[in-house]
Image 1 (cartoon, one colour):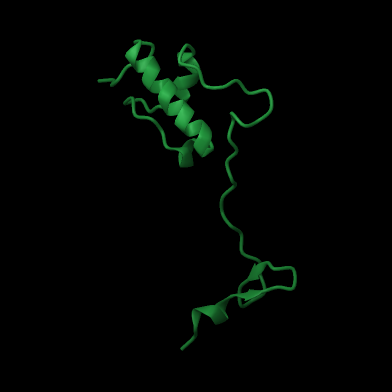
Image 2 (cartoon, rainbow, N blue to C red; image 1 turned 90 degrees about the vertical axis):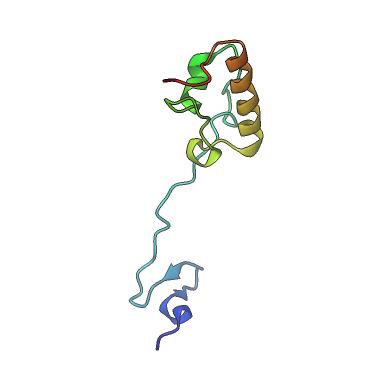
Length: 95
């Protein structure tokens, strides 16, 4: 029986290669936080058009793994969305 550790080997540059010598691709590109980029405005409850990009059509807040925001800006985004809901800039739920 073949051990799973034998199926892949490290190359001299550290890249993982399979038995036939082909490099494996990771399959996804890391998302970048739009708020961390230079010149991007911070989340603001008075700008509902920008906040609508971060909620679903049902009104749920999208998680950071989907939107690509960092943890610091995801927390700020959540509070700004909640403020906008209380002040009726955004709906709590769409039916």
